[in-house]
Length: 319
Image (cartoon, rainbow, N blue to C red; front, top):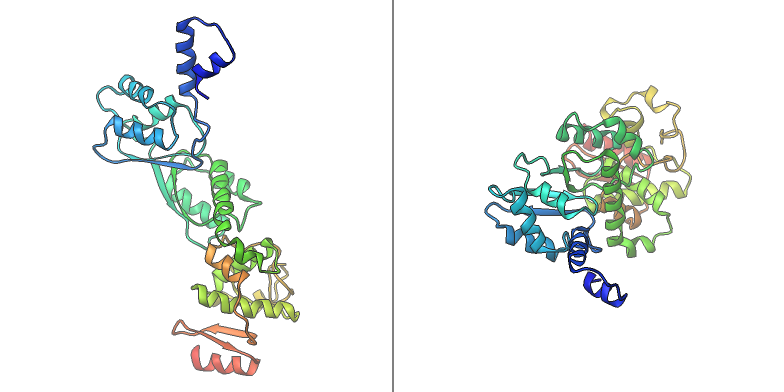
């Protein structure tokens, strides 16, 4: 509500100077429509007026005039500094001015690209390499401990000094925002979102395209339906750090709830953070009568109905 209208409506009698001060204070507060996870891009050569107009239109600030006056006071020579800036939560006009006029670029947003299928630990290492020693892997893992599978793989623009908890919150909110894109597909599945995300995390380690993920999902859901172990190698990377080519017979007998050779059904939690295609594939599997599959040395998938056919595929495509 406009401050002047508010005062008149409530019949406050105030001195004119007080009214001006109140209006200024109101204008410095974050607008009610402040964008969540908003990124501001200031191109080289942009004027203060252009930046102020963009910020006002997108509701980062309430007053373009106060923004211009604040920049003139804070940085009369250098003005706004070109770059990418991210505001992960509503902030004051003065803080925005301070950020976009800092000649050191300390407030510049850093681009973080998190690929599909990384575990929380792998994400933490990736971010540490990007943000430097100021980022704590330990604090990130503690904050993310209950969100494995739900830290959405995406390209983010974040402040260099972003808090680990804020980054986890951002990635989790992004998951919640993106999952609605496939909510109609999820609705036709008889599986819970939790189980779909667990299956999707397996698919990230077993297949590469939406089509192949759907076919593999068809095999794995069928195995679950007939009480047959999934026998997927992707889970061993999660609890042993070993890939298919490193596994030993002893590994396959290891006592872990993530050992899909010994235990029936899905593992207890996701083994990585899957992307939207993998979740979609888990919810919309290709119906199949196959129970076995492998990836040949040529990169193609080969499916089989019987173990004998599967052994034949191994002989033909894995030699």
